[in-house]
Image (cartoon, rainbow, N blue to C red; front, side, top):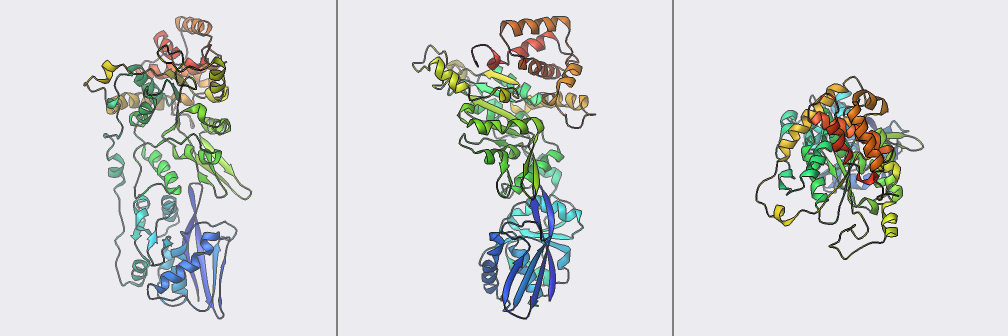
Length: 511
């Protein structure tokens, strides 16, 4: 008897429906075709044990299974449940007339229990698009798949629940989620809040500007000055994600298997990889491509602590994704593209010892050591970082002050207002949503300066030996400062503030 059961494969952040054809005939053997990987080939052992432990049997006949389209590489153990149901129906052990109306996915334990799978959300979206009635999957993944309205999503704990439902012996309730309620939950109670930070008013102002314009930022300061503490709180002042952004972000985390029984993600991601990370782990890839840290940080923040400690070639592979806001991974037979629109926040010590020009510190580094340390960060990478700010340690008087600082929610209101101005400004442009994405043409159009501002900028560039690359960055940051003030044009006070945020361009820092 020939039976068709439906599963799904995920490539990049999109799913493709897979037809699993099971044919049982006279003879003996188990033949699995259609480019399965080792995890799928090993499924016969899991299936045989699971069937025996649930009162069923592996047919002692010739079983031929084709996974179509046969020229697409299939990977992972998520097809166990699909193959098992196909074998049971084809061998006549169960009767299931509606089997072609459902997508069935799940990894089997030997006792028939189900283990979580990756990519449940993209699979559910594809199932809805292709008109399937429902989707059976492990209970641990049910929340992410239930985001998709108009699809019956059944979270099951073991194979027997699926069999009983298909035979009409038992009932399963589809899981439903109020996407909007889920989306707006806990938005005003961030885990890390700026009200916890004592002092550092100028750095908080810097963070506010970076969040308002989507600018990349680098924090330079000695150990213990609060660089990591400030960076961790940046997502809490970014504007709330739109539903489209939340869906995009959730899809990437679903594909990577990182959701852990969470539905729609409503908090912007914060990723902080260790400096021993490899190129592939950062940008994505592998023989079966997976999203890297830069894609996991999509619509959120990527924090690189101790930037000069990262291998230079790892930092260089970030240059193109920073510019294009997506990363394309090519293999001989296919290409996948992962979105990677993130804010880069980097931190570093000013010298190998961590204390640069500090008269109170006995630890000093020679000029040669400092130069070698800083030269690990290339000019083209710095070129993509708009704001450089020095972080100084907080004095005891401010640390011991009991007064609460301004909360993240209050700062976020100002940031959101500035972002709304930018959304209106760039609404006709497809790939530009905030000031950091402006190119030279847009800068000329939206950052026109009066004579006083021009003269101020010229004097600053000459006196501080600012590099040519600093010119556009200063104008972009000044435009964001003007937006925070709700000012229609950039004036000299905005330029003056923006000039302060280019520490690394000054003579004496980098070559």
